[in-house]
Amino acid sequence: VMWNFRPEVPEEEKSGRMKEMAEHLEALVGKVPGLLSAEFISEVLPSSTHDMALVTTLEKPEDIAVYAEHPEHVKAADTYVRPYVCDRACLDYEG
Image 1 (tube, rainbow, N blue to C red):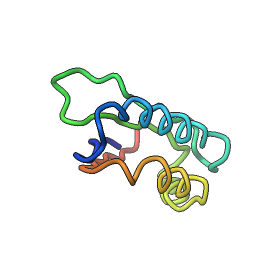
Image 2 (spheres, rainbow, N blue to C red; image 1 turned 135 degrees about the vertical axis):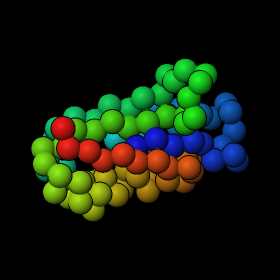
Image 3 (cartoon, one colour; image 1 turned 45 degrees about the vertical axis):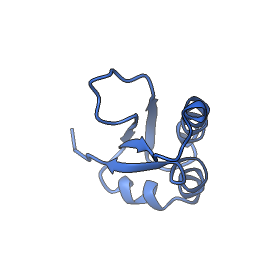
């Protein structure tokens, strides 16, 4: 999943917001069944079209819905991510 910051998020807050996002999203490993790994990407190259990304590995495709609806994920997303981001892009694949 990739996002941009909302235009109203002040530049001086962005680094701290990304640290909070990383901390709370990566902490979901071990709490959400089927979530094997979560890596928050905040150091992007200038050629990037998005400000940040979250790369997750799930055990099986059905775990996408489990992750999306899990109360710990919803709480982290609603508190630390959704209020500050826009332009969400998502790519799910089976490898």
